[in-house]
Amino acid sequence: MAASGAGVEVGVEIGLEVGLVDDVRERLAASPGDLSPHRVAEAMRAAGRPVGDATVLAVHDALRRDVLGSGPLEPLLRQPGVTDVLVNGAEEVWVDDGDGLRLTGVRFRDDAAVRRLAQRLAATGGRRLDDATPYADVRLPDGTRFHAVLAPVARPGTTISLRVPATTAFSVDDLVGAGSVSPECAGVLRAIVEQRLAFLVSGGTGSGKTTLLSALLGLVDPAERMVLVEDASELRPDHPHVLGLEARPPNIEGAGEITLATLVRQALRMRPDRLVVGEVRGAEVVVMLAALNTGHAGGCGTLHANSAADVPARVEALAAAAGLPRDAAHSQLASALDAVVHLARDPDGRRRVTQVGVPVRDGSGAVSIEAAVSFAPDGRTTRGPAAARLSARIG
Image 1 (spheres, one colour):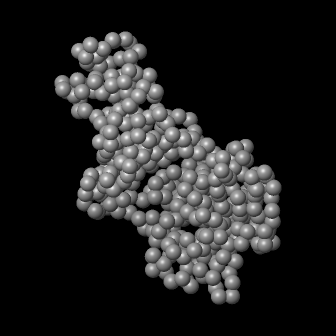
Image 2: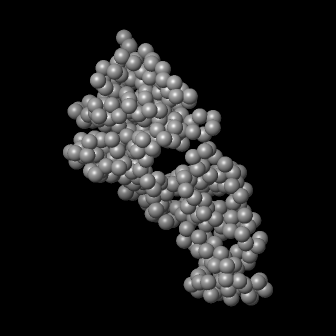
């Protein structure tokens, strides 16, 4: 068996004597063969270690995770509610289980161990990760989103970011129960979906945009056909008629790339009742705006933005990078978009819908997002200057 580089520095995760797993790994690597509890027990005896059934099985499980899974990160990924596992070099492994990031007791032996784990995970997704290409962004076979940057490009060492896919689809009622959506906000969101308004869910990284959008898509009439276009397949709406298209990065030779913009064009030929772009982040914004301006009502997507008011500037920047002039971008946005739903994270880590806004065009043609209704952490609802505009659109 080839030696694997990842290991747990202390026994806090698996309850094993310090150095035991590494010692057994080295002995097994010296005599190649299948990984089995029997061979693990033999290696432990050869090393003069006490051999007990529970210890043998624990060492075997740790080595199996190193070879087949995500190494010492595997137990973290299996914990209920975990959305992100982040490795900042050998000494820091963080996890987000819905209450914000917290430091765990998992450690790697050295940066070389982190590097080897990152390279193995990248290889399972068909990507190259080495000094010539020191970064990779892929979806692993189990749906986990994997990103890594090798040292010394990254510091304090090789970094690994794992985004865990949701195993269940949350409903709007679930989000109300979790405090992410107030009851009054839920009513507004239901009306937006039922009236087939075109909307964007905005927010920062980890604010819950994908979770909210997936829940809202579960409100779509079962008779409607949805086509999802995503960079990495993450949306899991509870709906009977969903088709998904996933982008593909270029291979090692630089060929075979399929962009989101290409997939949006393909989706328009698939007779969608709802066109959904999982995350608008590039040239696909131009195609999406054009589609929403040609009769595809009810389209939606997510967009990184610090506030609802920042959405026009963000769209303008993405459109400019795709060659669409500023005036044209604002014109398309004004006629395509009906509402913006913005999320933020409270200081306690809770993800929450904070505002619903609508686009308003001034005399120069520029679009701004005006608040229609805002939702405070204590449940209070405040009507904004665009409240009447939103009411007219949702009936």
